[in-house]
Length: 179
Image (cartoon, rainbow, N blue to C red; front, side, top):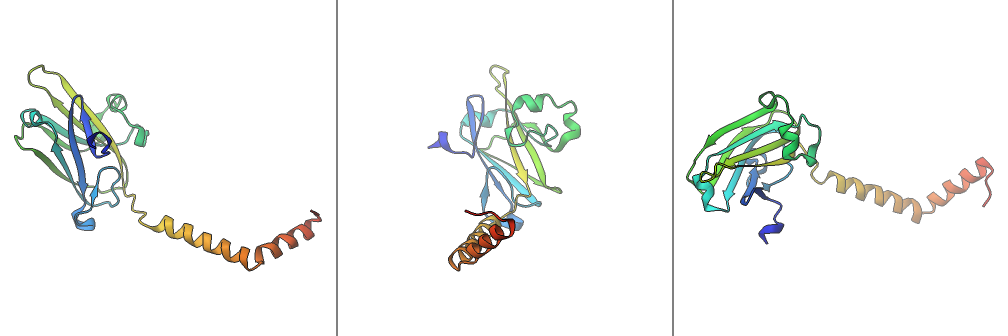
């Protein structure tokens, strides 16, 4: 269901499906939140409303100078005093007349970033904006799972061989604690 898709961004009543690729390191693997590698990154926005083809749209990426990370909202971005100084990528507003908007950016540093998409509805002149916070360089892969499995296996070994019980008994005897 489109309403439950975490890769959909909303700009007022307009929406687009948002996908991020890192072809140099992740081939065709898709991301829509955090980006695992510090490398060349392709942002793809598929318009879910045909009217977006007729609207000027700009796309900006800023460093998260607000420090709010995943909780960043438009109000946080609007409060940034020098948006240009925080900007790492900017694609000026233009009407692209295509169903898909694509830009590329090479990230040089890991950290939190905020993507900003702004468009103006031509009939009313009303501006719609959205922000999507994301982290670059979150390449943990399966390491947390392997660490958890390793610690679990070690704990099971100590319990089932009686080693943990012997250590506990020695510790109680050394401190004079009885049951």
